Structures are given as C-alpha cells and as structure tokens.
Image (cartoon, rainbow, N blue to C red; front, side):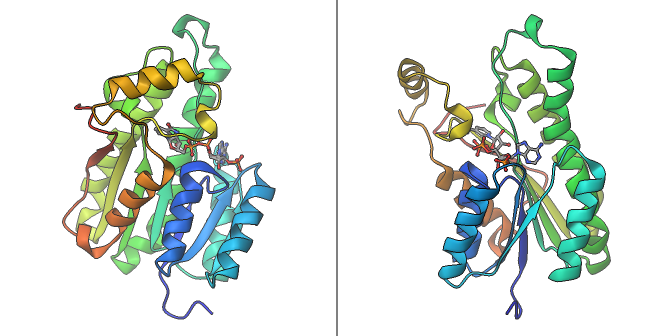
Length: 247
Ligand code: NAP
C-alpha cells in the first residue's frame, strides 16, 4: 500500500495547524504519520476521513516531553513503514501569564513540550536520515519567538530556542544532505487561541498589515513547500507566515 510514497511524521496532528499539515501532505500523496497526545478521538476521525479519500495514515500516540516515548514512537514507525523522510515538529502549548506569576513547573513545561520535544523527535529521526543522506526537518516556532510576546515570555523564549536549534542543526546536517527549516506563524485561529475574546481578535487584526489573522492551511502550505524539491536550496531559515508583520 505504501509503494514508493514518501513518509512524513507530523507531531500534534490531532487538531489545528498539525491537522492541516497532515491533510496537506495526505492530499499530495505522502504517507502520513499523525502523532497525537491526548486527542485520540479527533486524530482517529481525521485519519478515517483521510483514509476514506485513499490516503495512507498511521496514528501514533506519545507525550513528546518524554524521550523514551518519542524513541519508541519513531522505532515503531520505522518498523511498520520504514524511514521517515520528513519530520514536522509542530506539537505545542500556549499560556498567557504575567512573567512574575509563571511558576517553575510552568516554565519547565513550556520548554519540555517545545524545546525538549523538538530535540527528542529530531534526534530520533536523524540517524536514519544521515545514513541515507536525505531528509527534511521543519520546526514550527512563532512570531513571538522573533519579536517577543508580552505575558508570553516562557512561550517566546521556548519558540526562540527552536529558531536557534533550527539554524545550528541546519549547519551540522547540511553536509549530510538534510535540510532544517523553521516556520514562524503569526496569529492563527485554532484551539490554542480559544480564550481570546473578540476585542483581542480585532486588535490583532488591526496590528497586522493584511488586516486579518491566518488559518491553519496558510501554515500547512508553507510547510509543504519547504518539504518539496522546490525548496532544495533553502535551509537554516526562519520563515514568517504572519500577514506582513516585519521582523
Ligand atoms: P493546538 O490546536 O492547541 O494543538 C496543539 C497540538 O500539540 C495538539 O495536537 C496536542 O496534542 C499537541 N501537544 C500538546 N502538548 C503535547 C505533548 N506534551 N506531547 C505531544 N503532543 C502535544 O495548537 P495550534 O494552534 O495548532 O499550534 C500548533 C503549533 O503552532 C504549536 O507549536 C504552536 O506553538 C504554534 N503556533 C501557533 C500559533 C497560533 O496562533 N495558533 C501561532 C504561532 C505558532 P493532543 O491534542 O493530542 O493532546
């Protein structure tokens, strides 16, 4: 059933941006590993929908804060399907809080999900990519990691770390034929922003040159492009998809 399909693993594909990325790759004929953490039902529904359209989909559950769970997930995919061609490190959490109110646990959790998770997943897929001298890693950061977000210092710091990781890793694995890039979305309507009120949405639109917020498909389109041959000379970049906010 897999034939010669390329394999993409998308973390946090149960909903939002990750789900849109999984949909986009499935539409383009990739075999898609949809990772989820707690959103089993949503992930299963999307997988069933994509499979009904003829896509190859494999569901994988893991808490990406846990190195062993990530390792087991990657080994399971490699055993069942083979080597992963493209890794999209998308899973993430948000939290808005005054800096002085952030607890030790909240600070560590923010870094565990974003920074540790991206590290664990990338480290687990790289040996096979290096031995094949091919592969592509795309990290999802945030505009706030570039310009800093008030009341989101831990989130901004963790997303900034992902940008540093992208640039350094791209240099290290470029000679092995592997590209590593980062997409930094602006404000996107997803579950993550469910607590924002309409007044805040209006203010965010006003601050954006295109006078609108983005949707998950806007990010999926860029991620897909970065995975293709058309992006073969692009690596180590942080690419903003944010409606025109100039960094
Ligand atoms: P979302 O709708 O809240 O989805 C988050 C995803 O991350 C879910 O699939 C969730 O899995 C997964 N996840 C959370 N904690 C996890 C953990 N410990 N282990 C494994 N998976 C975990 O968020 P989104 O808006 O689509 O955001 C996706 C990415 O884009 C995030 O990295 C976010 O920081 C970034 N981003 C979002 C925006 C925005 O405005 N929405 C802007 C810039 C950047 P389960 O549901 O299965 O638990």
